[in-house]
Image (tube, rainbow, N blue to C red; front, side, top):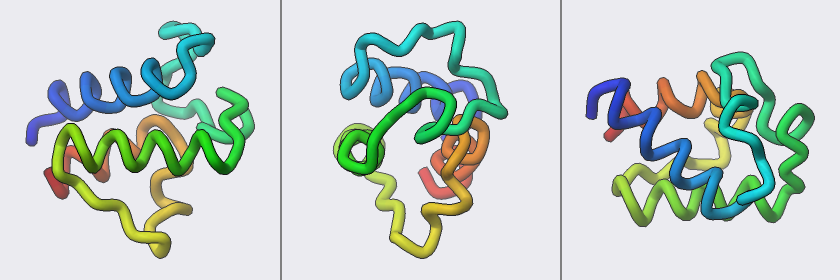
Length: 80
């Protein structure tokens, strides 16, 4: 999957789980849990939504890597 598609997948997943998150807040350095204020359940829902839409399963060992929007986009682009 290319980076553009990965961005769209991540934007869509976050928008579905947290519709109150402003799309302008989706910058590479934005931390999902701290900056976007996703609680742990919302974080897991975002990952599940990405798995369902893009077929990219993100194991628990990669959670630190996908803690930011940019990290999540990069992971999806690399593994999708």
